[in-house]
Every structure is written in structure tokens, then in C-alpha cells.
Length: 165
Image (cartoon, rainbow, N blue to C red):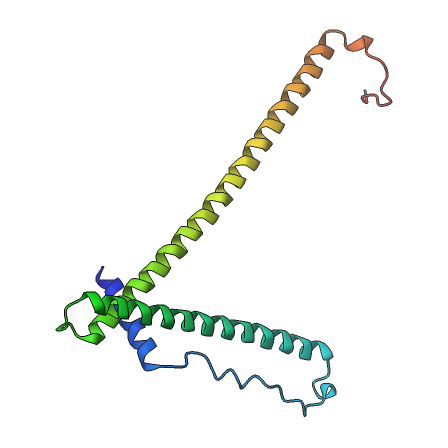
């Protein structure tokens, strides 16, 4: 519990101190003055473009989550502030609201991951059961063919292959 509190305090301080966890989103322009032939391959440039696109999408996702968190935090602070007595410091209310929101987010994420893991386990077990049934049926059919052929091995029709003697 103490570790969680220390982590929440550090995370809250990080959020409060830095307004921009991600670089400036307007700094996404490429240097178009560079000629593609200078690097030798166009594939390298394509890889760089893909990396830039991934970085952009990650930056946008982080900014979206930050904005949603700030809006929800603001509304929750107002609601909690209206219920709590006046002598409680505003920073303490903000810290507690942010901590509760982070724990709620982690709880929802944990539940989502549990659902995914449960579905994965069900699929894995069902594949194992199907393979087990398939192996059992194959074994029974194989034994049925061998036990029927042991008694009258000389009377079976020629199947195109003969054992080497």
C-alpha cells in the first residue's frame, strides 16, 4: 500500500509539474529539403515515415488521454469540493481525486485484461480438448483396424503396398 501511495504521489507531481509530457505536436514537419538519393535507399525513408506516423499516433493518443483525464478531474474536483467541508485544502482534494481516477483507470484496465486473458484461456483449452478428442478417435480407429486384421491377416485384399520380407 505504501508503494502505491509513493507511486501515485510521484505520478501526480510529474503531471502537475510538466504540462507537456509529449514534444510539441506542431513539430511534426519533415525536412523536405533532403534529397532521397542522399541516403541511398528509398526504403529507409519509408521506414522513417512509418516511424514518424507511429510517433504521431502515439502522441495524439497521449494528448487525448491527458485531456480526458484533465476534464474528468476538473468535474470530479468540483463535485467533491461541493460535498467536503471548506477547511480541507484544495490541493489535497485534487490529489485525492486524481489518485482515485488513476486507481479507477487501472481497475478498468485490469478488468479488461482479465477478460482478454480468460477468453484466451478458453480458446486454448478448447483447442486442447479438440486435439485430445481427435487423438482419441484416431487411436480407437487405428486399434480397431489392427485388431480386425490380426486374425485373418492372409485374407485381406491387396492394397497396392506389400510389407518387405
